[in-house]
Length: 568
Image (cartoon, rainbow, N blue to C red; front, side, top):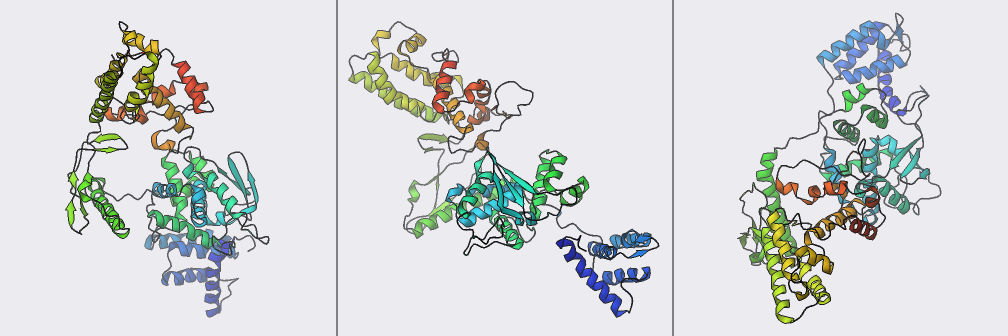
């Protein structure tokens, strides 16, 4: 029995006690019984409501006691095998889960727990436990055995040792440590970052008499926690994310992540290694489950989204009432975007407590950019050009003579700032839009009398003023550089996905360009710049600073600085 694991002992002890009690009541030896006695014992347990799985465990417990008949152990005897087949036919075992929850739901919740340095110790602990369970397909028992005193920090990973044997440990295969690696594409889901913060926070809270257990309570006196506590933490995260914890236990995490890995074309050998299984049949039989998806997307798109939006408006009105900051309903509007817009009426409560229907508009300005229902931005471009032309006319009327230096000062500060603002969003799609925007700069340069008689390109070159089309492309590359290198607080995975560089030429930061049917999607920021970015040199995309990237890009594109062939 010393070879039994604690879980095995816990399962077998119940059936062994029942076996000894059964033999005692019938004055039969539990060590030297007859085969008939064993069959009657199993039948007695069957009559008490036990199913196939429980009887199979009882059969294993009797075999572990060394009971043999006709040279066969109990579990291998032909009569017992035939008996168990009959039990399975009449009372078959049912899997605990016929489907599993979607891991993306929990990942979306974990992203909201950011940045980690601003989280409470409780939220930090919950996020770390769930990320460890997800990234390692770990059992609760595995997380409970992590040792705080034996951890090693490497460049982009933490290596933690175990304080005991894992369930999959056996002679010749003893797992002694586990590695938690960084995830640069999205720091919000990086277990390395969360683990680093957790060690920093808890180092001053650990007592000298600490047993070495990695996880500790987030409430005073910050003692080590049991396996059940870690299980409860995982279920807390699941419940917060919207998972029904009445149907799913903390152990369901292993099935969720391995099933997700299988559908994502992860090699089965990697799944078995990570989860600690020796046979593929274990995964296919007990853990490979379909994702729960009972929603009707059409119905949700028509009904549920509108209901949720109205609930959000109601909650906002209640908040304004509680804080005595009531909204002016007359200034509140509704704008619907997209081709398949649903005509839905929304309402708010005004200052007098009356319910007022919100006005519907076809456009709305946000941070200086005018968004219309079709997302074409033609109206915004028209308003921007009108503003720029008004300022150009004002300069023409107020200044009798303008030289190159004075023009550049006035133009860059008063006119071009309007033409450049927000061009990452309203990037002109058609050649006509590009021309009308470039014409604003072309009209402004005519204010310089010394440049009369020259072509537009020669005028740009004479005063060293790049075309607006060049500046828009340059801005795109600079912003892409900042996103890829995590300089801006923008998740790279929100817009882009790194391409598979195996067997291809080019730099190591190539992006994958998704297929797009509509011109609006083709010319969006996350799609239009991919080809240009992928064609940049390796040395340029791997520069160490934004200024170095700008200088290198200007040097690479020096012949395109005054080129307007793609505009006219």
